[in-house]
Amino acid sequence: MNAVNKGGRGARLPPEVNRVLFVRNLPFKITAEEMYEVFGKYGPVRQIRVGNATDTRGTAFVVYEDIFDAKNACEHLQGFNILGRYLIVLYYQQNKVTKKMNLQKKEEELKELKTRYGVGDD
Image: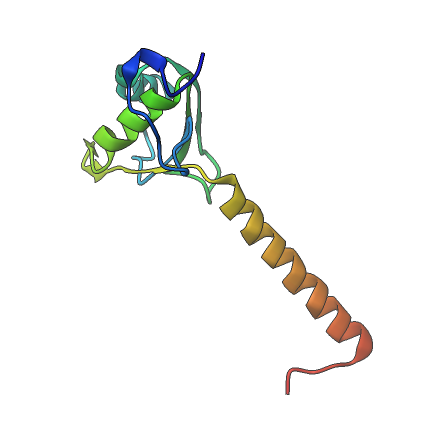
């Protein structure tokens, strides 16, 4: 089914819109069930991954079945208050993550080359 004609909803979507949302500023104690309850109101959710490591706590990925449901959730849940925390809801952008990882890798390689060849940062 063509996304343009799906249910007559909108002709074009901005390029950053996709089915995967990245959610920040979540309460640390929120459960997956509570996440499904909040985000499921906007359409069928394929998957929710709540961060539980020290550096990912308070974040989650929410994957919708339909791009329009993700767009609707993003628009309505931005700034939504859950247990005194205001949600930050963004579209997940793989290229930004990859670009950041590539930059870190290049910096490490440069540092290694400088060490190997005795080049300083004087």
